[in-house]
Image (cartoon, rainbow, N blue to C red):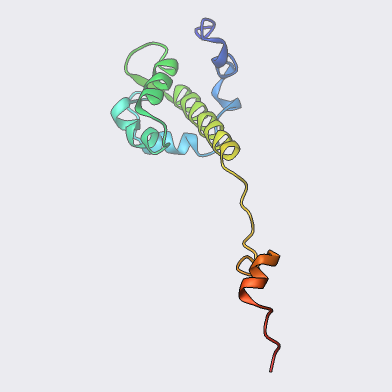
Length: 129
């Protein structure tokens, strides 16, 4: 198989696109109007760029799936690229959630005095009339 020399991280992808394709990948690929069953980098650029990944990362992904180096990718290669993009997006979202502090609910009592010295300087709360 032509994918036997892929880097280890892409071995799962070499088994075929049906295992990694999302239901919309084929529809999206066909919307790009492939010629001869392939699309160019210019055709997929808007799709790939909308992923939020850096140009360098997208170029790396392109190079990893364009195995015959013809500057065009087939449906299978497109599905593999989309899967790798989704994996990077999930990893990015996961790392962001680990670095952000958990949201703390805003208490309606945060503006009330909390120490004895605050009570002494402001006096006791007034009684309702």
